[in-house]
Every structure is written in C-alpha cells, then in structure tokens.
Image (cartoon, rainbow, N blue to C red; front, side, top):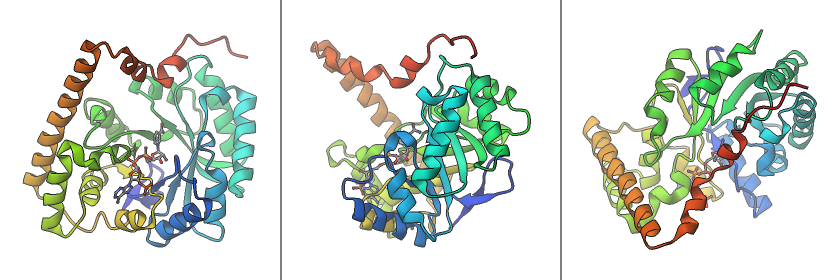
Length: 305
Ligand SMILES: NC(=O)c1ccc[n+]([C@@H]2O[C@H](COP(=O)([O-])OP(=O)(O)OC[C@H]3O[C@@H](n4cnc5c(N)ncnc54)[C@H](OP(=O)(O)O)[C@@H]3O)[C@@H](O)[C@H]2O)c1
C-alpha cells in the first residue's frame, strides 16, 4: 500500500483508509468488512463520536495494528467537554490512545483557544498523539494553529472527489505548502459518482476497462493519487472493500485525467442547472439542503469560560 507522511510528523500512513459513517446496520458484516480492509493494507480507520460507529471500530481493531482517527463533535468544544468526549471515545474504541483526534467542524460559539488547550493537554496525557481538524477553512486553521504551543495541526479532513473539487481553489494549495495532510472524505461522492443515471458511470467504466479496473477504482485512484492526500472511502460491502484496497496499483494516463476532470466539471455545472430548475418550479424545499450544519455553527463566539 502506498503511504503518505502525516503532516510533518515523519509518521507514514496508508494513502487509502476506511471511512465508517453510516456503517453498521449489520454489525457483524461491518466488523468483517473493516477487518478485511485492514488485512488488505487499509490500516487507517476514520470514525467520529457523531457516527456511533466507534464501538464497531473498537471491536474490529482488537489485536490489529492500525492508525486510528476519530473526531470530537462541535457541541463538545468547551474545555471540559473535549476531555470528557475523548475519554468516552477511548472507552468505546477500547484503546488507551487515539492516533489522530480531529475537531469535526469549526464551532464559532466556543473560542478555539479553549478547545486547543484541552487538545494539547490530551497529547501531554498520552491520550491522543496528533491533532487534526475537519471542514476547516484557511482562516480557521491559522486561528487554531496560533493557539497551539507545543503541537501543530497535522491534517484537515475535507470533502474531495471528482464531483467536489472546491478545495483545489485555495485550501489544498495552502495545506500542501503548510505540510497539512488532506484527508479526502466522500471520495465517491457518497456513491453518487457511480449512479448510472448521470452517464458518469460510462466514462469511469470505459477508462476502468482499459486498466482492468472498476469505475469506483478509477474514481478513487483519481483522489488518492494526489500528493499529500489520503482517501477514506466507506464500504459496508465486502466486495467493495476488496475493490477499494486495489486502487493505487495502476496509473491513469494524463489524457484520462483530463477527460475525467472535464467531464465532471460539466457534471457539477449540470447539477447547478438542475438545482435552478427545481427552484424555478417552486420546489423551495431544495433550499434547505444549502443550510448546512456548519453554517449554524458559524455564529459569534461566546466569551471564554
Ligand atoms: N469529516 C466530515 O465531515 C465527513 C463527512 C462525510 C464523510 N466523512 C468520512 O468519509 C467517509 C467516506 O465518505 P462517505 O461515507 O460520505 O462516502 P463515500 O466513501 O464517497 O461513498 C460511500 C458509498 O460508496 C459505496 N462504495 C464504496 N466502495 C464502492 C465500490 N468499490 N463500488 C461501488 N460502490 C462503492 C458504498 O457502498 P457500501 O457501503 O454498500 O459498500 C457507499 O454507499 C465517511 O464514512 C466518514 O468516515 C467525513
């Protein structure tokens, strides 16, 4: 398995990890799938207190060597809450130490200095090894880093796939320059990249056939081949997990990469056109999708406790 350096830590981690959001409707199958992924080299597992999958992960990693990442939820960013949330995650995961502890989303209602104080103490106490963030902008990262005395932010987990390339505008360049690893979530756009209805499958499939690979493997290769990037697809199904572990043993041609990027640029634009049509038809419910959890959290900070 290809590896990447995590931040500037010198620690090598697999370029392909495993996501666990919405994993677990079948507990035993989920554990089996995680074990299979680890045995195939995907020894980076991402979970979060918010996913309610830390118990499943804990069961799957017993006796395994793995790099374990989890997240503290924004509603637990007050000093005492961070400490408590970490202890609870450790208990659910059945480990003494979390490798990478990430702030799940920015929370403007809690001063970041307060959250980071608790994070640094957790490192000192040996409960976590590295501090990461998720869904943080450049400004958020700079603010958070400025509060750290003995550590630095090693990673930013963000949405990144052929269908979601916003980070390429500025954030990815910034992270690459600062030595902050990009952990790409929803690398298959939650499976929608593979939806037959949009015609995208055809291009991914045709390119895949040239390399003896599936459409999903092409889409994941595109993400996980990027410098400084780790992709964390989620796969509840064993056959998906097996496919995902074999994503970096081929190289897309420059021309194929261009073809994919051009097609999906248009695909995203077509999505906006469809969105506009829905609005024009009076389907205002679709607007609700724009009001994200992150926006709700981006409110004025309260005074430090
Ligand atoms: N930090 C954040 O805010 C945030 C937000 C979202 C996600 N994440 C993390 O990123 C992880 C991955 O993102 P995601 O779960 O949103 O979506 P994803 O990994 O882009 O897509 C998962 C979907 O793709 C399917 N799939 C996986 N491998 C496949 C294959 N080889 N062929 C066909 N279909 C395949 C899965 O099906 P099956 O499950 O049926 O196999 C599932 O339906 C999450 O699990 C979570 O750990 C983080």
